[in-house]
Image (tube, rainbow, N blue to C red; front, side, top):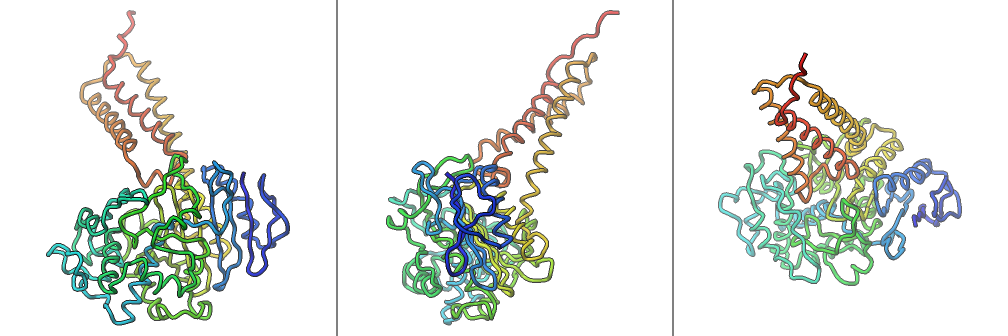
Length: 477
């Protein structure tokens, strides 16, 4: 059963604007964004196969409204609530960046120190000594992303962090030469925090960042008590996933509620919207938000650059936004903040099929801000383009199949070789994609990638047959 409740700042209120079947209703909310999303989110969840969502919107640094949709555990009929504890995945990175910035402001490290100067429990390769703390925080250390499928049952055994880093460490570019998104880099920062402070990363982050910000239920340390509050995650096929942990925590191991992440967002606002927190200082937060490198690859479609733990973009009205998303097996999350106006949106889903839904939420939020859609909302354009491509590929396969049936003369050798080669490439491409555990396209088009693959594969079969099947002989006159 789909349930939905809306909270406003102060007293709890619920919503009556065209609720979905099964929604609980007991009041009225005039907020236009709430009304719009109350109608749209359940419909989009059903369309894309998303199990559950928690959502908070901040205005002027304070909660404007929040919503819970869907199920935390559909097999047990447990509805989603805002108390649910999520894997926030790569939203862990900006939180980790705050912890490193606290070390900087305490004078224990400097951003441009070589990381190796502060490590004693793990030794990087000699050629890597020029990599600085700033490089790792801004993904400009030239390191590969690492094995993001490296996960283990919480009860263990779990591969030790330092062994995992040594296994995944791959230098793909000189440090400082450009943006290379790297989970490994942030996991090395976890080792740095432990070596500098002499404490476990999860404990030091709790004392230095999470508790001072009021993130009371957030934790980088998995416990059975926390696990009991977690929804069931669902993968790209919509299947439940088993609970798991990563060797590293700094890059994607944070657990938290939607309220925890909303408090983190509020703490990062510019005056007068920021609460009275001093970690890091306003100048430290400004440094975290300053773009250090333009992004490359697929990221350039959704962001302008990367700061220290945050993607950055300039909105159509000139305001700066900082953000980060997260994705893991069974989970998807997003945080978008406009510090100078106190606006933010936090979206957490226990489904890896939620990116198209997130795109529509971000587009509606952008409209509410009075700006052009933020970069991540470009995902909403992928679906119609994919359907159009599927249709065109299907039509092309049909036309070529008809031509194959009707032709009367054998084609010459070279065109047949080209045709057969093209068909073989398409079939091999579809086979390779089907064999992968994860591709970026799977998340963007969770409900369409199968149809698109079938259209590409069908065209490949027709092309290959066009080259291999002997044409019908000409009819006798």
